[in-house]
Amino acid sequence: MKLYPTIGLEIHAELMTESKVFCTCSAKFGGEPNSRCCPVCSGLPGTLPVLNSKAVEYIIKAGYIMNCDISRFTKWDRKNYFYPDLPKAYQISQMPRPVCLGGYVDINTDGETKRMRINRIHLEEDAGKLVHENRISLADYNRCGIPLIEIVTEPDFHSAADVTAFFEKIRLMLQYAGVCDGRLEQGSMRCDVNISLAPEGSDTLGTRTEVKNLNSLRAIQRAVEYEIYRQTELIENGERVIQETLHFNDATGETSSLRSKEDAHDYRYFPDPDIPPIIFTEEELAAIKADIPEMPQQRYERYTGEYGISDADASVLINTKSVSDFFEAAVKAYNNPKPIATFITVELMRRINLGEVDADNIPFSPEDFARLVELAETGKISKDNRKTILREMITAGESPEAIAEREQLWIKEDSELTEKTVDEILAANPKAVEQYRSGETKVFGFLMGQCNRALKGSASPAAIKQVLEKKLNNI
Ligand SMILES: [Zn+2]
Image (tube, rainbow, N blue to C red; front, top):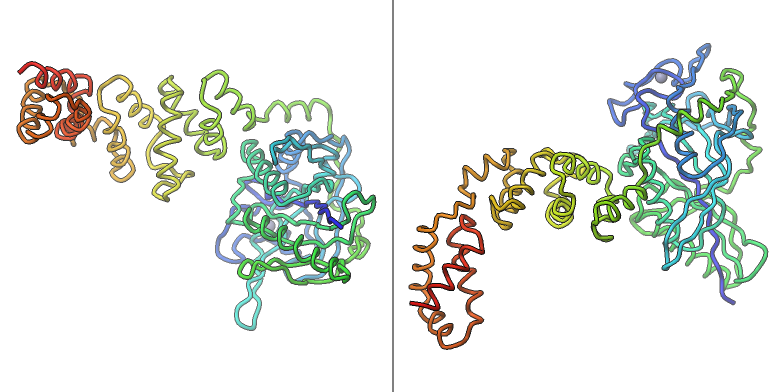
């Protein structure tokens, strides 16, 4: 009996608003514990929440980029539960009338395009954070009331690869739309995965478990793989899968039981009497839709089409929004996209991957970077020295011209110096000269390299080649 996994997702994404969703407290990450709280988000009696219109605009944008229907009428409900991270003892969320319904996102895995359907997206508030130290637990309510969208998918996923491809695509799209910063390490996006197994071809789904609060791509992948493995073992050994909520332990790579699953009615949802429902006009929705910036896929098509950049380079550029934005600004300064793209994907990305440069905080301007590429393209510096100058720009923070000047990296085409240097190299390598003259012309490359190094990029390769050939061939 071959078992087939069926997976559905609930993705929470924090919105990039300045203030929280129902009060004016800062929605920034971090801060002294409980320094970004007020009577509203601390749940003191007698306070009244006021809905942040920016959060509503952001969820509508999220809905449009995921091809959802935007409800013309939407309202908020109270989800009641007691837990120390929730001072009000209820969370303001949306039950029957969410902002977004339906929708889909296409992903590519296993060499095919798959359409993953979205059930709904609703707007709610985040809860606080509990810090467990020794035998006490501390509550930090700074995160309480940060606007959150919950994206609920249909159970269209069948592997860890499907799930991670979807999650990564959503993250990138939300970042491009300016809706969520996608900083997983700060908890800006979290994923709950529902997994069940059933015999292949079966009409009914098996009992499902839910793994909560996965906050990295690696954790999502490992948790899905482990849960498929664990349920397969249970079923094959004739045991039962219990419907429950699980926690994934990053250290062991295993899941463990958090609690048996509550049913939805346990939350006693009822309409929130403090937040009026919203009716959107067509004009309002059209204005929000028109304000959505270019999505990664559109950028990819522009790069490969209009700019003629290779598929591989275009993918690298769009996969990190800050790098793609940097590229855009560099092309504005020097309209020559291809060499800029190549130098970014080969050299800048290498330094980002080595951890020498933070992609979100590149230590030089795109204009300086563009001029560096231009200096090499117009023959003012050598391609090798372009790399040397970039290294200096990272550490010294000077302009490319200042570094070229200080380190004397300009191509000077000083023919006297070139002749003198070539003479010195030939005198120092009599054996190679001998080999070349007796027909072993392969050593030319070696001699070129020696001259190049000695001249430190002050002469162009073409000029060196000319002098070297002349001296080797007609003494
Ligand atoms: Zn507040």
